[in-house]
Length: 274
Ligand code: ATR
Image 1: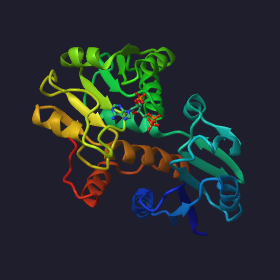
Image 2: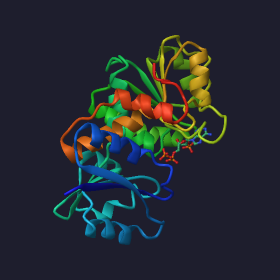
Image 3: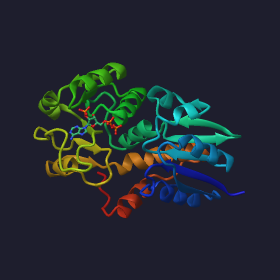
Image 4: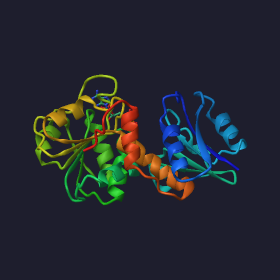
């Protein structure tokens, strides 16, 4: 029988996950489909019970439910437990297991960029997204992570929890020239034209990666490209987090590079990776 998957959130109509997973199901010869399901704030418990009753095989979880879903699940993988947040759920014989593929998705995207594991990496931001990435970088053996944040105390807290080094934004700007990669996890540039730090000291060839993909080119990426940096937009992490979820559901590792190109094109840009 045809299997079905879902992506739940509020709002949900903008999600690109059904587009991406349906292409992969087709490419892999799997008789399955993903549908967006709008669950309203306050109705998560009923919504998840309904998905289960209707035989969902798995689902992605997006804003604002990544933490609220946790107590509704029967188990968590290590990444989800560490973050107390879930973006992927598998349903086997009515048992729901939560995973978090966001951080590992980011790190897979970094793997194609030749950033040595002992090279200094600067991450800007100390919120939920930053937390997932910091722990995933640590798990994968990246040993010199610096964390800078507008609110320094939050940088200190996340650095202490993840074995990183905290910096103020001013210190990060001063030390920028030594960094092999700069990762923006803040929402600066999402709905405004601000940058989370000045890139004046950026060394040419440094990778600048933004987890935002709407817009495809944030003000930070534009400045980085103008200064000779290599840029990576948030489509790369989006596709890799989806690929890890797809593999958990189906046992098959889907093709990511063509998907990164397709989604960049769908969002109206050229392939802004590299
Ligand atoms: P998320 O879960 O998406 O990471 P969050 O937990 O609200 O969201 O964290 C948002 C991050 O973006 C924080 O690091 C925040 O900095 P503060 O801790 O100082 O609030 C950062 N941020 C948001 N808007 C910013 C801006 N305009 N400039 C710099 N940093 C910003």
